[in-house]
Image (tube, rainbow, N blue to C red; front, side, top):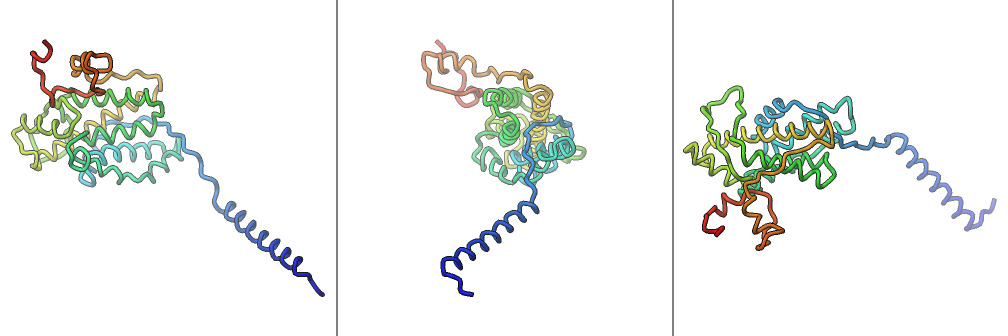
Amino acid sequence: MNISRRKAIGTAGLAVGAFLAGQFSSASAEKPQEEPVEWKPVKLDAKKVAARAYEIYPEGSCMYAAFTAIATAMAEAAAKVNPALSQALKNFPCQMFKYGHSGLGGQGSLCGAVNGACAIFGLFVHDKAKLDTLTAELCGYYETAELPVFKPKTSKFEPMPASVSGSILCHVSQMKWCEKSGQSPFSDFRSDRCKRLTADVAAKAVEILNRYAESEAAEFKSASTANARCVQCHGKKGTAANVSAKMNCIPCHGEKEDHYN
């Protein structure tokens, strides 16, 4: 039987189309659609998260430990009530947060523990203004609390002195503690201090996030007021409006009475 060239091409096209359609439909049947993730936090045990942060700190330092301790605890707690969230957190590439150690790759800027904990806030709090309020409370705590308070089950670094950092900057926080303890910033004793400090920050972050999980309308404390006098002049409404910041200014810029005259 003679078949025209046009009919032959048309028949071949239909065959290929049918084959591809079958392949895609088979793939779709074999791979079910992934369940969308509802980024809603569940309440956690702050003390257990603190202990976890302390233990995993050697794997990647402060930012990594703060984020990973909370994320893995959240994955476990959400396994039954929110399995899609649990799976998403289990698959999260937490190693990316190793960059934040020692104030951003050793730069001594923002404390990695604060940075990592606030990254967790960002996963669950999508309103920017609300996110700022959670962040402000954690930063205010870091600036004003006498830390560390966490005590591991066993440690050769005892007694562990505590100090008030007055700043969220890594190098300032370390310096204040070193002045109080007499230890070198390069000592193992100081390293253990930062492990404990990371545990404290992770625990505080969990406490804050638990309140948010209970009610998204929950109130959160404002940031430290240590810079209030400074921003009267240098803030947005001041006569010398040249600074946009909420952190404590004094540790770096000092406080001289004649400056205000």
